[in-house]
Image (cartoon, rainbow, N blue to C red):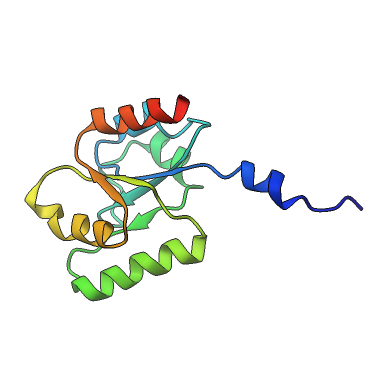
Length: 132
């Protein structure tokens, strides 16, 4: 049996980008199949009728976070922490549009030390920096 090489395994860890995927065409074209990082969608509910069926199929294996704005700030923050801890994935950056409705979600992510951006250009710039 071969020895397990922790150091080589650690090289396979990809940066994680989390983001609201309501405009799933951007994430579908730019992020889902990118081998340089892992994409973690934020869904605003369990109703997927607004999403393209192909997109749903392609993202079903991802570590999706379902945000509930009806939940209290403290409970949702705890749920978010547990999600990251359980799946052992901690995002470096989050795409959250600059709408007032996402203010609490932005605050939670920032409280966890995650950089929050609100334009697709900022995400693409981040990706370019990964490429080098």
